Every structure is written in structure tokens, then in C-alpha cells.
Image (cartoon, rainbow, N blue to C red; front, side, top):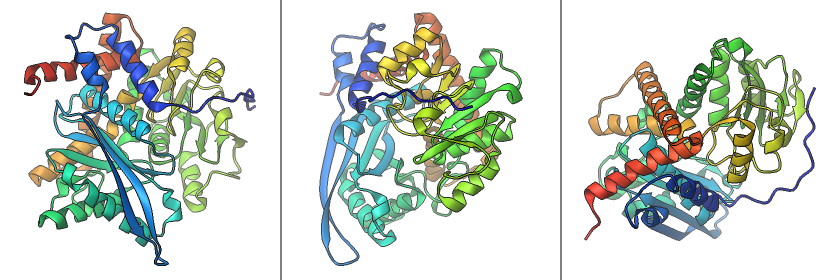
Length: 425
């Protein structure tokens, strides 16, 4: 039986405000040097570009794009590029800040960046998408290099878009530079396992969490996953393969719920054939909002920011929330969930599998020496599990929730690097 969703009208999420509030909550528990907290609140640089793209019918249309580097104390800035009509500079600032903490938390030598173009990619033909991508890449070229800034795919972009960016940059400098982006097709320097990395990392973190709290039988663990894109579908498939009971999934148009469990390979096949979960016959239809409050042990929000907020948090029945998306839970919802005893494993830990394997891809490209999928997944599990254990140790030390603990761990690592390097000049 599907639980009805209460009628509410939540306000739109201010992602940057959320990122700063999370940062302030963590810093309140820390003893940073004078000026350090203020320094880390600000992006290092922000780049806005306005550029023309010729449409197939000959019209020239202007587009706006962004690239924000939040911090580079630990290494080259790293972060995805998203194509969406909802991209804003504040959203990109927030995502860049979260990338800084994510890379520091899992202890890889990157700072945080993010970028995007204000466009609905579904309205572009393939040739228009290529022209937009190549022009955007040429505008970003002064900021990019394997040692300075390394983009990756995000919402609305994919491996083909990364290949076009790599080729554009390589043509500009006059030689092939596969390490300029990650998330590329394997035949031009991509890594085995990159497509599955974020979803698989979410499941590795979920498994470590369940083990800590004594959940030993996968068949008795009910999972709901909001979002059936790359992250959600790969998490659902891997969890199903391991014997967990995935009882609910959704895409942008709505979701499915079956308390006995869904046949995920069958659902995935249906989705790939129809490009939608709508009318799948072996489950009850639910809205995205309703899916979040159905009974389950583990809830994995793997869609957009701000999906769990003060209006629906009181109704969530999950024991654990493993954040597959960036910023899916607002600070107000965090407070409600913490009071309820819900364990929230934060995005910068739970969805870090993508950037970890992007790091592997970058290393492989620089060395021109490539690993098989088994090696990639083994190293991914090692790194993300160690980050989970470090976060738990910090939570116990400071007596804080896991989100604050993850931020404390990451912020301290970045602050230590800044102090060791010193302020220039």
C-alpha cells in the first residue's frame, strides 16, 4: 500500500546557501587559524562566458556558461559540467565547494570545481550539441590543463561530450591530451568502471553503514532509490545483484513501488526501451514526492538538490539515507532527521565513487597504463570504505552527525594544506 504524500509547497532550494550553512556548522566545532574559515568560504575564481552557437537552421543563438574553481590547495580543480536550463552561478558555486570537500574527504589530490551551460540539451540536435560543447570548451581552454582543471560529466552531459572537449582542447594545443577530462569513452582513454562508479560507490558506503548497525542479511533490507539516471540505475542494479530488496525507484516522471521487491534488470530493460518508468506493470505508480516517504530501511536520493526538506522529512520512514545526489537534503531537514535518529550518510562521502574513479582515469591517462575493471572496483572500495571509517571516527570524536563529521574532516585537510603552503605572496 502506497503512503499518500502530505500537501505542502516547499520553497525552491538555494544550493549555495545550503553549502555555506553546512560549512558554518562544521567550522563551529573547529579551531581554525584566524581568517581561514573566511578564506575557505569563497571560490578562488569564477568564470562566466557568453558565446554563440549556430543552429541547424542557420540561426545564431547566444548561450551562457560558467566554471567555478573553489579551492586548489590540494591539487588541480576537479568537477563536472552540467547542461541544464536551471544552471545558475550560485548552484555552480555550491557544487564546486562540495567538490572541494568531497575530494579532500576521500584523500585524493584535487580541489573542487564545477561548471555548466544554461541550456536544455534535449532541444539540441546532436550536431548542435557538439557545436555548443566545442565552443564552450574553447572558452574554458585558458583555465584547463591536466595540472590545473579537469572537467567531467554531470547532469545533461556524457562520455561523448567529454570526448568532444578532449578533442577541442587537443586540437588547440596541437597534440592529444586525454588527461584533460575524465568520464571519456574507453577507446580514447577512459577508465573501465567509470560509468558504474558513483552508483557502485553508493552501495559500498551503504554496505559499510548496514554492517556497522548490524544489518547482515541483504534479503531483509528494503531499499528505495529516487532517480534512475546513471547513479540511481547502477546503484539499483548492483544492490539487486548483491541480494538486497529494491522496493522503489523513480525517474523524472514518477516512480514505482512494490513492497515485495522489484526485478531491477527487468525494470532497467523496460526503462531503456521506453525512456520512462511510466506504465511499468508490476508495481504501483507513485510520484517522486510519495516515493520518498514509503516504508524502507534505506533511502537513496539520487536525483536533484533539495528533495528532502522540512516539509517531508517528518514523514520519511527510512532508517538510513545514503545521498547519491549532490545536496539532496536541506539543513532544516537534517535537523529533523537527526532528531528522529535517521542516519544520513552525506553526499560528499556517499557519491564520491565518481570522482574517485575519475582520479583513477586521470592517473591512467598520465601514465598511459590502464587497469582492468576488477582493479578499479577493488581500489574504489578500499578508498571509499576508508573515508567512511574516518568520517565515523570524526563523528565520535566531536559527537556530531556524519555530515558535519565529513565536512570537519575535509575542511581540516584543506586548511592544513593551505597553512603548509602559506598565503601568496
